[in-house]
Length: 251
Image (tube, rainbow, N blue to C red; front, side, top):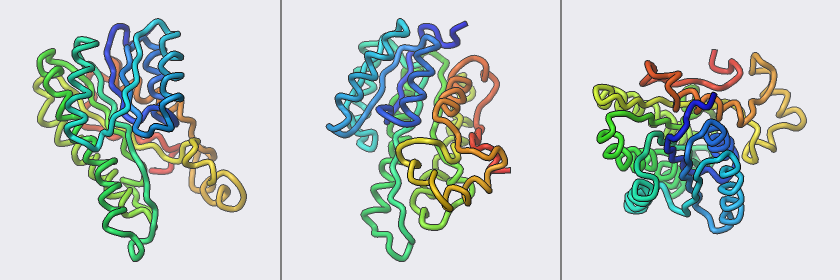
């Protein structure tokens, strides 16, 4: 049974890592995919991913666009609606980290994290509202982080941006529930990706593992499965929630 047959899903920042796992899971369940990447160096990888997604019998296209740019998001969503007809699911996954102690964190580093992680969520959500309201249905999924719930030394900018996503998610859920548009957040813990590979070796790895009740890092595919649940009708009575995919780290 394919849970998203014929649905149209937008996913930002999907050329690698969690975003890649998300679009693969959605396409496996029948969703047509429009996904973004931002750097020129990711173009070949994005093109290859689009072709891989099509092997599931769906339409899939990549756009090089900056989710932190409001005008770029406006043009992107307009093109998606023109080419696919609507938007049923929007997953705001684009994100970066500029880890540093607050004493050393520059205003420019702070602003960049806020723009990419938090402003992008506003930009994209604002743009998908019109087609979703017209259809009187939709699912918006925002990628937060366990760090946005717990905080972490050296990650004040990242934690703030991800905590802001949670507040935004809950507010949007209040605003749009009457239109049958749901808005939820996912808060991944330590997930095996290119960004966390360096944490897996030696004493640092043991220190992290000791804090996780399930005793392991998560797989990006497990975050993808959570996104599938929130995108599908399996979660039709779920909105304004934050689902932690963290192996129990948030207990």
